Amino acid sequence: MCIKQAVKVRAIPIFITRPNKNMAKKSSLPGFNLSLGYTIFYLSLIVLIPLSAVFFKTFTLNWDEFVQAVASPRVVASYKLTFGASLIAATINVIFGVLTAWVLTRYEFFGKKIVDAFVDFPFALPTAVAGISLSAIYAKNGWIGSLLEQIGITVAYTPLGVVVALTFIGLPFVVRTVQPVLEDLGAEVEEAGASLGANRWQVFYKIILPAIWPAVITGFALAFARAVGEYGSVIFIAGNMPMISEITPLIIITKLEQYDYAGATAVAAVMLVISFILLFAINGFQWWSNRRLGHVK
Image 1 (cartoon, rainbow, N blue to C red):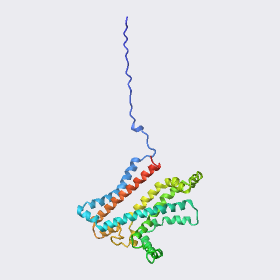
Image 2: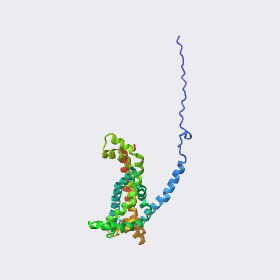
Image 3: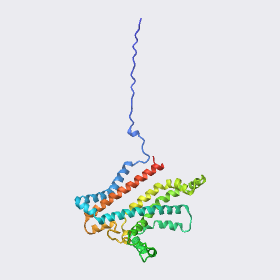
Image 4: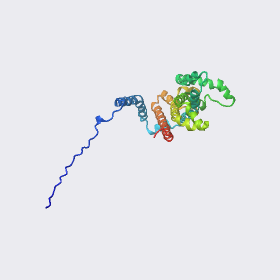
């Protein structure tokens, strides 16, 4: 006799619970929404709205007027001088800024605090006073200019004077960004590398340079950005000769004095776009170099 047994399989309900938003891990620093909103508001009020006004005023020109304002030979020559001199000055500041930061962090000597304070001198000195001082020193009858004139080098009222002025105002940016990194690095790292058989060049290239490289690029970008918009310390030593030693900020000021507001904003907009592209390229190079050196993943 076959007995059929019916086996009933009861389905066991499986409940899949979704994570509750209230149960999510909260940040240890509350107030993100408020902080983000305040940051965007402050950034818009101080930076974005004034910059957008430059482009809005530029849009009042037609294409021919815009090209005539921003592509005249005089304006193009000022672009070349402004950005070329800024790049040269920033490069010089990187070299001498790293050396200055190295001396201030690795050596003890009499008057070190005074030298350290003099580094910030271009920050505290008014730009007009700096320009007058530089033009007086580097003039043909000045202290340094008279010596350079004997070997055939003229600094004042030439493009070389523009480079000197931009170098003067950009040096603290490199020094103050590299100096804290060198202080945190410590001399023990160099001694460890030397004890393992590395020479001085290998210690610098393999140990010190990768550690300070992000700070060096940051200082270069800050010095370049400061030099591009510099006006007060340049106009006195540059000579302001069209097609030779005239910088772009001076052309903008000249157009404003002539009540050509649309032309001034057009030149400023082109200068702003070029500066943004160059700074974006510098930041991109910094990201690539940091990734290559292993600072970021």
